[in-house]
Each structure stands twice: as structure tokens, then as C-alpha cells.
Amino acid sequence: MTRTDRLTAILDLLAETGRVEVEDIVTRLGVSPATARRDLDSLAKQRLLSRTRGGATTGSLSYDLPGRYNRDDNAEAKQDIAQAASLLIHPGAVIGLSGGTSNTALAQVLSTREDLNAPSSKPTLTVVTNAINIASQLAVRPNIKIMVTGGILNPRSYELVGPYIDVIMQKVALDIAFIGVNGVDPDLGPTITDEGEAMVNTVMAHRATESYVLADSSKVGRRSFAAMSGYEFRHLITDSGISAQDRAAFEAKGIEVIVATAS
Image (cartoon, rainbow, N blue to C red; front, side):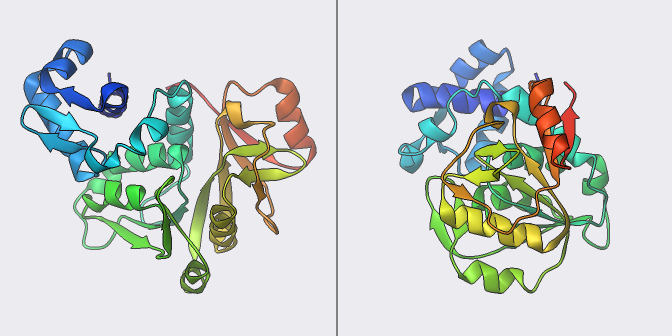
């Protein structure tokens, strides 16, 4: 089990009852007490839980954690997508990361890449994001420069939204933007449940030389409330669960489909 898998599993355990003990993690995940404590400390630094003596609780996050971090049947697919997206990122790049679980997985992959964490006199990567959980996740990496867009916090997604972001984003230029979505359709394109997040995603994509939509195959063919108006949808990274028919429908629209292979 990788470290990313362990952290996800711990959040799953926490979501079940709102509390988890070190002994539970040792028994359920087969790790040492020292590893369990280090994992809990790491999650606490990301403000995904509150540490207690001998374990952790959801604390003030209890209203949101079960819905956001319940067991995700698509977690493995999102990890594969994150690995595929990581291959597009070279040291020294300036990238944009919107919110969402696929981009959160991508941030985790980037935080463990050796070439991005090697000693350097200048940033090995610059990340512009409107997701405070992603900023927190990468903030512990001294060689990764983080810019947070500002805005009004959406507590359901940890994303910053609002008109202030447009002003700030006009000051930056991105090499690549990675856009998380709730649905993606070959005709309508990517869609988001929140119109404010859809606006931020569109602005971020416009500031990038290239932009890639990250969506696991369960989101293919789904439509959510808000479309990314004015966005030229050209690249999709998904997993091997996409059907041949759906892939052909995207490619018929001139959209490149990158299918992530299992890690």
C-alpha cells in the first residue's frame, strides 16, 4: 500500500465514525504505530483531521469530511489519471490546478516527485490554485512555489470563487492548466455543479498555453449544472473505464483523449 493509499484509507476510517485510533490504523492497514502516527500528523497538517492523544477526530471538519472523503470507488482511477497528468509536467513549469479530487490526487503525486523536491536555488514548479486544500498539501514542499488566487471560500469544495479571481488571474501566464470537473460530455463539454467554480476553471484555462480536463470515466456522459462558457475543450485525461463509443465521440469532435493506464 502506497502512502497515498494509506492516507485515503485513514480518511475512510475517520469518515465511518468521526474518530480513529492509532491501534485501529495498525490493525486495519497493517502498519507500525510509528507510521500510523506520522500519517495522522501529515493529515493534521493538511487540516483534514484534528489530532487527539492516541488518534484523531474530524473535529470542526465533521460537517464536510464524510461527504467529501467517503470511500471512493474511483480512487484508483483518479490516481492513474494523476500519474498520467504528472508526465506532462516538467521541472520549472508554471501550472494551474483547479479544485476537485482528481487534482488533489495530482497534487499528491507532484509532492512526492523526486525531481521536484531536489535542492534547487529556484522553484522547481510554480502552482497557481484556487483550492486551499491543494495549496496546503503542497506548501510543505519548499521548492514548489504556490500562488493562491484569493476569493470567497466555498466550504463544500475548499475552492475560492468570485470576481476577484479574474483580476488576479490576468496577471499570470500558465504553461498548463488542469481542470477538475463533475461531468464531461462531447457536445456540451466539461460541466461543474457550481457556477462560480465553472467561471474560475474557465479563467484558469484561458491563462494557459494548454489545458487538460481531468475526469474519471464515471463522469463521462454526465452533465452538471454549469458549463464552462467560452472554453475550447481540446484535451481529456480519463481512465481505462471509458467505453470505445464514448472515446470515439470525443475524438470525432477533435478532442484528444488520453487514457491513463493502471499504475
